[in-house]
Length: 327
Image 1: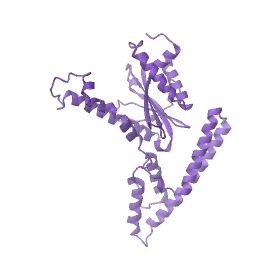
Image 2: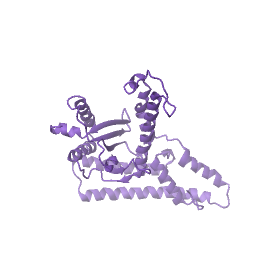
Image 3: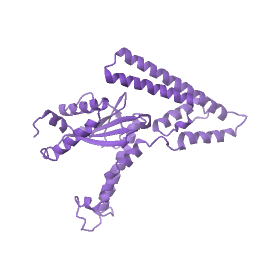
Image 4: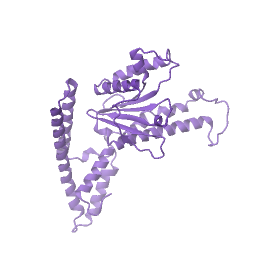
């Protein structure tokens, strides 16, 4: 919230917070600022291209970090210069009526302008995977779970069919919200990336309280942001977590490393192939096998035919690849 000085630093704070949420319209940036932002992206691209050919030396990594930090500082100087102009107008005692006009415009710029550059992760997920709940509107599908010929009301006042649909919608809503909270907690604005991958692991065999904890990571072009949270807690706190560091289960650890390596090497298409093979095995020869964990993998590609795709994998694919005996 702005203090009474309406300083340029306060406006900069607003910008940083709103920009992380992805609701700042880039048409309001100056060309000078956009050029600096493109320079930043070019350096990131240069770094990624080098990483695809060989491992970078510590000296090279430091050099890239210094160049990127320099550009970020220059971008902030440009912003502060613009916000200083805003501040001077708003705090001008000679023309106090300017305050309402300029402040109103700033509210429009920072808070009310439609997100023209694309939807946030919550809206993308909700729309792309709404079949998670719309499938329960199909009576033939619902017949797999309940006898639709018997008509009665539950304590909620809903019929069994309505109850299934209600809870499916609620689960989907909560999932979309939780993913958005993870992105927000890690300060990741999906619109700032052409592509990224979200991985979340959940235990299927609940034996201890620790099995309720969900871990995962968001993998961008040049960084990995790990996270961990306990959905069973009344107040869920999302913490930073080194997801790919290790695992108590060796097979799960191997699965995580394969997923990470395929994502970082830009070979996410292989994840689809692996998921297909695993699914066929689990519904065929391994139908009696119960995996320990499930990986939900969401692949975002701004320029792809499907902007958001989802894959489910289990540690079983490692056992299949290693041709281990599965009891």
